[in-house]
Image 1 (cartoon, rainbow, N blue to C red):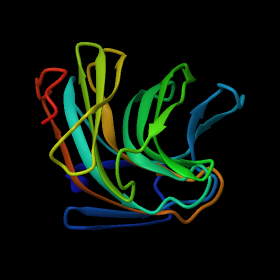
Image 2: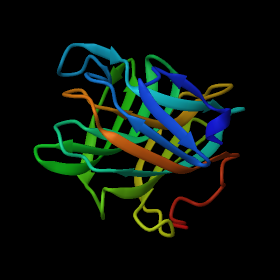
Image 3: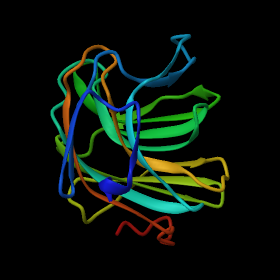
Length: 191
């Protein structure tokens, strides 16, 4: 699926090998709008496909997060002011499960990462104006990590993202990217 995708803010160093995408982040990259810090950054790396409306998407992420705000995961984007990024992010010396939901301004929700943050999956479903986010550390069990309203749109941009606000050089490998119609699973179905 990576061969069908397009870049927003293409990194200087990246490669695609079959169904694997390898990225090395550029310096001072991020996605953020206003809250607390007072600035807007929209220069993180995002490789996306366009959906035909509602969808379920998932991707596997491999990386070693070592510097403040190193981050990688899955992004869903309507436009520069309406998006969500979900993944792992290093903060205060700990790799956290992190999500930033942006509706004009950004929020930031974090939690304890439930397993090894060097290899994990993120799944996002957008259906009927609702965003459902799940994380898996084994590719089998998918606990819920966020449920939120999300803009209804004719199409969405969805795919892997990564950025390093405090440095450059984070190496990330993405694989197993899938985008399909919403999976229709119940909220408490962890499969």
